[in-house]
Image (cartoon, rainbow, N blue to C red):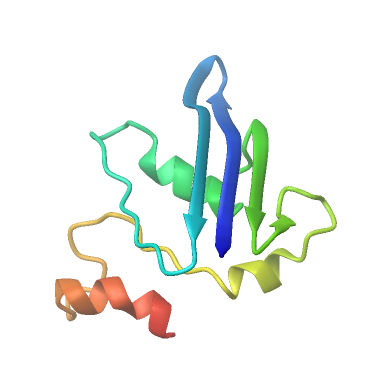
Length: 106
């Protein structure tokens, strides 16, 4: 069952295009990692998926609903998503595993 579909996602900051037509399908139960060098657009990609950053072009479907639609209930959608952004110490009182599993459990 498809839970997330991204079609031709693009993001520009001025003339600098950091996301260049990314497409992705994620099925229920899939575990994915987004890896790349510093400055390659990983965090921007995650921020666009959660609509913390507005994409320049493309569509994002979560559970079959296009979350790029203006009438989309972002609060409801975000309550079903969890993302962990890279940092060397998200919460320094937690170990790596606890930091990574905090969002899905809260």
